[in-house]
Image 1 (cartoon, rainbow, N blue to C red):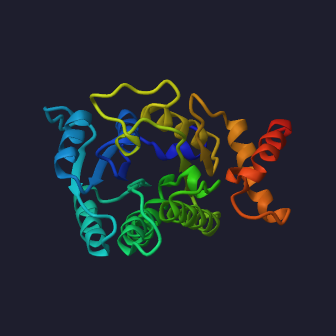
Image 2: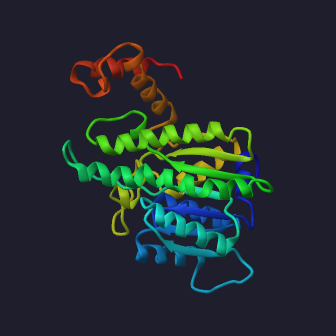
Length: 287
């Protein structure tokens, strides 16, 4: 293992929120495959136990890495305090922290529940996790390479219209991750912003009875991409998918920031009067 991927060390422990399914479960499987202990965290107790069994199996191998499940709501600071006590009691340290839990959903202005539900989970779930476990990670980093992975979204970067609360939550998460990376720049704790592309998960309409669309990635592909980017010690892990390339993502991001630079109105990529120019300009960009 090279670079920041050294955090995937045998015997180290990974704590993963939103670990009962999707990308969180895929990252947990990756950690377990690297002989790491895994602490799965989710608020869905039934799905959490299924995930634990999927990773660890029915039998218990006392000599192998441990897989433990803990039910918690990441939006509640008191759940994080209890989780911290439990994690230290069970494992003694945490070397890999993946703050992945998130919720979707649609709403509109004046719908306070919509904004509160999404921001409390997607944004404060990250804030609570960092505040609770950063001292633990820093303590572990005295002797080992440690890492913090925070799951963002392309919607927090290119900001497509239609879901203001979700986009705002993921935009704020990006900013928090960038500041955390800066603050830890001289330490042995690396920070990474994981931004999946179109991924076939429960949150995006996936399920055991549905077939993955050809354009979507499987969660395991996202976990593998994360590992490869961490081998290069890269902060931004912007995942492509089978429909959208890394080059296309970069062009969309450059056009979006151009609204500010060139004094255009916001979200021009989706405005009828700007769509043709946006498409033409992005097609001519050299990345």
